[in-house]
Image (cartoon, rainbow, N blue to C red):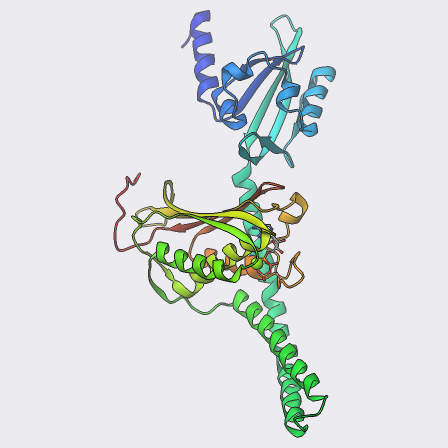
Length: 375
Ligand SMILES: Nc1ncnc2c1ncn2[C@@H]1O[C@H](COP(=O)(O)OP(=O)(O)OP(=O)(O)O)[C@@H](O)[C@H]1O
Ligand SMILES: [Mg+2]
């Protein structure tokens, strides 16, 4: 048991230094008087940089956090926002946090300032979004089945009739062109329905060993050729020491093609796309009865216009597109492919700066990578 005052203080310091909760203490004139290590990591500020800095400067573009600080300060009551705050940070992506501001009192009961606690809820938000996407796909299954039955069959009839008509028409007849349009458009609708059916009940995986470096190199080569007229620099940081991973080659090629295509389409005139691969030995996929396996992370980063916060919530919804010639199925299909490989797909974007797509695939390989496994 701790008795002396100094032992108490030492213990308080240990607690502050060890907790994952980001804690910032602020005095009555809004000066930061204490920032614990978790808060330094979250905000990107060192204790020296933060010391006595006005907290309103630290969060100057964050009206939501300033509101909580001001309310706790002036009304002397605790106030929280557990839902919507995106913490904007210098040189780092915004982070979903829950924030609490509580008045800080001295032993004499006089208000000294406030304590601000921030908690990283990005994983929780991501999990909620993953569940929501899975539920959307479930709903689509019924729709796809309905479409296949009610639309695909009559469509076949229309196509057949258009084909017969074109055979009946003289080759010089102007109407021939219309029959070609009918055939082309019915094929397009048929293609979309098939995509949707694949999305909801895909073919079973054909698993083989895949060399990620080669697969990505080939896609980039192909994509660089189709993007003529734009000046796109591809910056490849592919770790050649990553052994082959197990997966469905056709599906994984499609996944990376979708993401790299989105990046190239986002760049209107000139820009850079960085594609990198590495082994993430910090996170592991753990399955009952099996040794945990690390993830291979593939990142596709573009410096295009980025995605605004109200749009980013919708980009995985099938058929959602902001492009005049897009089908809006690219990301929904990509999500499905990643999930079918027991992986994770994350998209982080900052408007006017660019977008980062991260694909995490579990390292299921016959060749054990030369890294430290935390078992
Ligand atoms: N790298 C990116 N930068 C900016 N916006 C993006 C990026 N990737 C995706 N988006 C946004 O997400 C939307 C959905 O993307 P998705 O790949 O699902 O469909 P699409 O590209 O519009 O059409 P499709 O892939 O079917 O040809 C896009 O229309 C675009 O608004
Ligand atoms: Mg796309």
